[in-house]
Length: 157
Image (cartoon, rainbow, N blue to C red):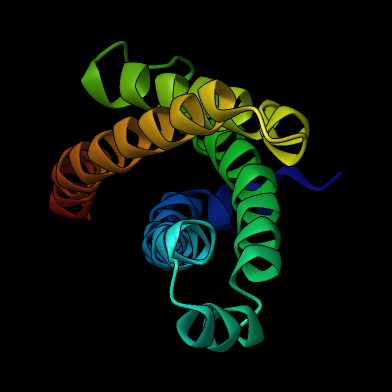
């Protein structure tokens, strides 16, 4: 492998992780919307409203968005740590790293509850909702701390 080529792109690698994560934050909010709509299907008693909601296929779209989120969030987390290590020879222990690791654990745990939810387990469903609300909160924190990191990187240019 040509190390000189890697050296020339190393500074720009710092911006791939934030771009991916901002996209994932948007996808997370979309998945939240789909989840709320999917829940409305289960809880509404108005048959006409239920028919209308079912046509939106919110449950399928929520599951698909969640699957994409799971894969890309784990890849994005590992990629962010890899780029940090490549550029600095170490990881920086702080709230951004800890929250990111926490988010990775939360999304994996939340996804692992899907088979139980499909069997109608309400405890799994409420746990899934709680974990994902924590995930959205941590994601907001990640956005703030991530932009602070980006600003420090830009100051070095």
